[in-house]
Amino acid sequence: MPSPSGPALRLGIAGLGTVGIGVVKIVQRHAELLQARCGRPIVITAVSARDRQKARDADLSAYAWETDPVALARREDVDLFIELMGGHEGPAKAATEAALAAGKDVVTANKALLAHHGQTLAETAEAAGRVIRFEAAVAGGIPVIKALTEGLAGNAMRRVMGVMNGTCNYILTRMETAGLPYDTVFEEARQLGYLEADPNLDVGGIDAGHKLSLLAAIAFGTRVSFDDVELEGIGRISIDDIRRAGDMGYKIKLLGVAQMTGRGLEQRMTPCLVPATSPLGQLQGGTNMVVLEGDSVGQIVLRGPGAGEGPTASAVMGDVLDIARGLRLPTFGQPAQTLAAPVAAKANSPASYYLRMELMDKPGALAKVATVLGESGVSISRMRQYGHESASAPVLIVTHKTTRDAIDHAIGQMGSTGVVLGDPVAIRIEEV
Ligand code: NAP
Ligand code: HSE
Image (cartoon, rainbow, N blue to C red; front, top):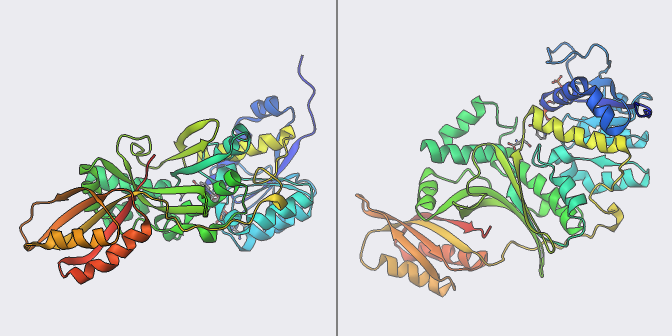
């Protein structure tokens, strides 16, 4: 006997690009399956985008068209507003606020919006008895928000980390496998359409930093504090670094790490070396990986597609179904009013470092470098000098555990040795 059906959940979708059209396709393709799973029909009533004449890969003729996403958010025949336009100001913010004010729940894939305004929007939503869900905003198709807020809710989280920007991982792994320099692979990524309209969001680590700040808020019960994320992009990583890190048994990844320390909340999104044999080290191409560590569960590794039409729309629909089923959780896993203001701690927890420098090839040069390191409290674990034909030699050093402050101090003194050419490169080696 068919089960009784509840009232339809009526969706209004603002943004009909990669993700928006992906959502339309799932709703159209899986109408029966969705209804069976949540006990009520999921229907689209209205959509919005900038250009109504643009050819789109789905039939939208059954839906009302709104030119203004704010008007869409306020429509009486919309129960759930889905924001898939992007951008942390402008229409995405205005329409999300309008939807909440009009008593609608919101699903968004917009990490920038929540990284900048997540606390205010969450407080607004919760005061109005509404929910905001954002599974698609972090690591695309990987259900990491659900894992943190639900499956791992009984854990005190120790550390959250991961590779959360597929474009950067594509660039780094392509440099390695094809032996191509950064600029060439960056251009390839542009041709393939991988880069955001502003590429610095990807290669500058900003997009991944947005994502990390959202995970940190849930994991540590703190207000989203994107401004405190230490950001460093991949633009300075050379093919030499990739090769030489490989010689030492490491891969270079744009790695996000958030952890609560005795000094406060550390959040960093920076290039790191990870062991080549670790799951993170083996991550290829545009794939994402998130590692969650809780006091009871230990370590969980989630891996999957971090972007693209299908995976991102899949995550949006997971949120839609939760709302259709009546699941109503606070945005960041606990009431927004109870989230603590985080004390930002400089990422100074001890780690080994990879140092690459160009040394003048003359007697006593290495000794001078070793002295500077020693005087800065940095101890050498391994060292390698490469064969060379010029008057300078590439030298690699892996240190014992030390602090970033000590490394920065040592690098600051290198110029005074008179034997180090150019700026040394220092990359943290993360234990994963
Ligand atoms: P997209 O392909 O560029 O599509 C953006 C859509 O928003 C377009 O349909 C555009 O209209 C519409 N739009 C932009 N400004 C608008 C305005 N002022 N008024 C009405 N509509 C407007 O973007 P996307 O890749 O689908 O990304 C959407 C969101 O998902 C972003 O927040 C992004 O960060 C996030 N996200 C994307 C991915 C991914 O793999 N693409 C993964 C995770 C998260 P027109 O089509 O008429 O130009
Ligand atoms: N630019 C992002 C990436 C898209 O490369 O991962 C998904 O958020």
